[in-house]
Figure (tube, rainbow, N blue to C red):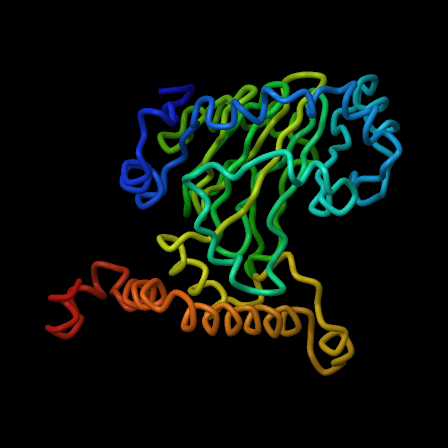
Length: 326
């Protein structure tokens, strides 16, 4: 095991079935040591190579377009408590060559969102210096994620679903949360409390390691070195489809990562939550339609899972036929 009990496995000793049974189906994070070693071995991700090939190209940094050479200069020299972070969902448009420089690890290739068009945002290039990172969040749309560290080291903090990290307060509608302004502020104020919690999990990843983040898990990531590079993707597998359908069907306003149709924004009689719900419902319908045509068995299994009683009381009071099926 790694820090805080997070499992660590070598891909050569972990079959697809074992990954599903030990980690994906029960929803447990794992560090897959060296799962992206071949990708990390390429000099593409070296600082000097990135500068030479892509220095003048503009990437998304903190809400702004920034030349890579300017960002890397800032990242190497800043002393900010909350450093800016290159976190770009359109990196393959700015640098198509980078989009072709990595492969999806075998455990994550069955991505059902790939059946829909348009699909929610799904892959990012991540570059940052020490102290930068991602504050506490849950990945969107009921998806899971994998994250391949290619340069530098990352520290990962986790809490499982329904266990909110100390110091983090989600809004009642699920759209926002209140938390300390910076990761370092959270660490100073709440890390000791988090470590004492029985559900807290902590891990680390280095070049070539891939971290699996199960659907619904809170996580926070802190870069430990002056130059870190990673690629990450969100995905919906057959095992996780029921969670995505549940969210899009019953809480469609929580959809994320889709550009809204201009006609929705022009509907003045709809408030923001209802506009988001229109988009979420449309995504649900596109996904279900695609699954009916291409993966009907997967859709049927997810619908069966959704129909199962979720609480002990629901199981005890379910009709006899349903109780037997459960």
